[in-house]
Image 1: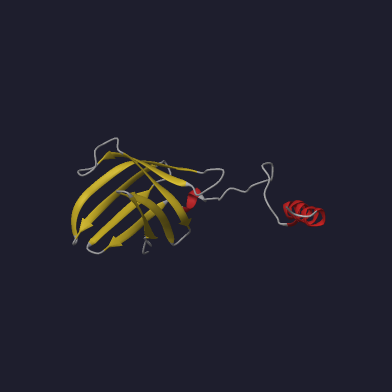
Image 2: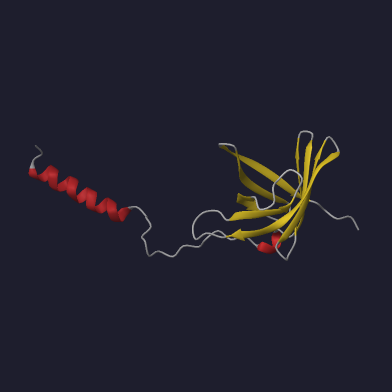
Length: 143
């Protein structure tokens, strides 16, 4: 058993530590991560070995894309998309496919956005049981 001065010191140290270190309270203001929706509009490409993807996100919430293997088109697809911002955590990009040779109409997919700027779109996507980071690059239109 601790003697009274040691016990009092430990109690005082515990109480002080509750106020000494910065910490968040339930009512503290929080700024959610922001994604500039206008930053996603346009065409993006992703290359993985012999596979290459192109996807265009339109302002009306639709998308279309093409998927190539070894330079030969493997699929063309279309659908609708939206971004959902959460109060805490990264925003998510939601897709619903309406046309594809490889993906059934109505299939929904979701990616977690890690980064979105004028050059790159980093997403975490589910691939089986694993999450895979994919980095899409903006396609620059030549004038």
